[in-house]
Amino acid sequence: MRFVLLINGMALMAFAALMGLMALLYPATAEVFEEALLITGLVGGLLVTVSDTHRQSLRPRDGFVMTASVWMTAALAGGLPLWLWQLSPADAFFEAMSGLTTTGSTVMSGLDTTPRGILMWRALLEAMGGIGFIVTGVALLPILKVGGMQLFRTESSEQGEKEFASAARFAVATILVYFGLMVLCAALYGFGGMSAFDAVTHAMATLSTGGYSNYDASFGHFDSAFLYYTASVFMLAGAMPFAWFIRMAVRGVFGSEQVRMLLAFVLGVSAILAFWLVETRGWGFEEAFRHSLFNVTSVVTTTGFATDDYIGWGPFAATVFFLLTAVGGCTGSTAGGAKMMRWVVFFRAVGREVRRLYAPHVTVVARYEGRRIEEDVFSGVAAFFALYFGTVATLAWVLAALGLDPLTAISGALTAVANVGPGVGPIIGPAGNFAPLGDWAKYALSIGMYLGRLEMMTVLVLLIPAFWREF
Image 1 (tube, rainbow, N blue to C red):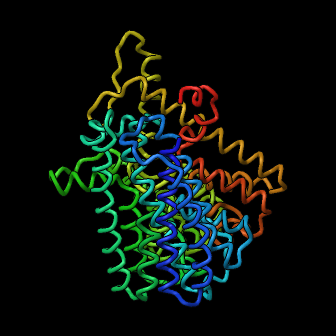
Image 2: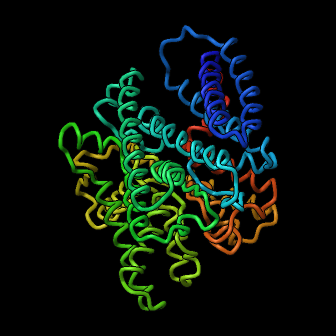
Image 3: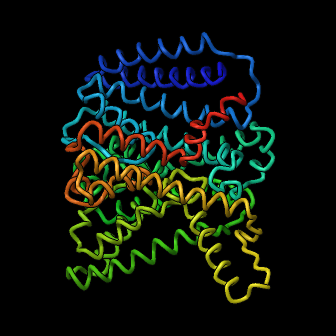
């Protein structure tokens, strides 16, 4: 456990260094970040001092404890400057957890006049959260076999089954791709008319599929077709497997089943909604498709940007967006949600069972990416979906018990666990935010975001007494 303390201490020291940088860059909020730096640096230094620096390797069991503890430690540290600035403890924790889990739900309003130091800190939280989940999703979850993730393998992560270092090297390569795409996105945003500050912060929110904007009107503030299409492309890029980008660059291999499914799904739903808007609102097709593509991409990739209050598009559109909340991007990406790979495996399993009904003596082999799907993957995916929707139902019940109306409770629970951002309804929909909710509801939603980002099992396994007896 002292090695886990070392990792947490190092994480806090990294946050302290970023706080120091923020104090230098933004004098208007320098005092806030200096105070946060002192507290974070002191606690991080104490953890490093009492930790074990001689451990050279990690066991899978250590990976569960390290992952769960570091994300909670990071959220507490990330919320400290927000609390010292002017947010309440519940609001600060909610905002930091939302940023680090790249959910994008916010309790803040008046963003147009918020100090730049605070806006940049929110963007940095999302950028760090995106990096953190790339490492978690590529290097740890496949090895820990969380929710059928053992199916998501690369050559590096297969070798990393017994040695984490090889998977970690692959994670470094994905981080380089992440930053490269972020720089390109910021450059195109600047070309499209954004200020340098807006381009950088929105690029961080886009590639991390986080969705924090510097304006209360979200991405709709810019009202630019070029920026809408650019953002749609890079939200999709953030939701694609970063291993796929590396394979394309190194081997020229473009095939990916879940990428094809993601693109086909987003384009298909966007086209349906575009025709709906043409017929019901009288928009031109290009305008309708532009807004549909942006908002569908934002929800499916769990980014959370919005160009318009799509709940006002009518009951059909509102229902579509509610259902899209549960989809998610690809495995090995920054996106949250159930993930496209799991949905593909789920429907392959359904197809296999249906075929067994009319041909019980036929051996049905389900495949993914040309490889046979093993029974442990099917059971892992089934267990994940049971936990996923069970967590949503439990959280919705808690929110309802805290006084939220049924629509806000159910929508809030789903958007938190799926790490999407805006929910459905007049309170937490794309035209509102989470500020009107009570403190306990915000804490409950923060835990929902935390569980959803770490895919439930990574955290819930820590509640089993036998897990600790084996340490």
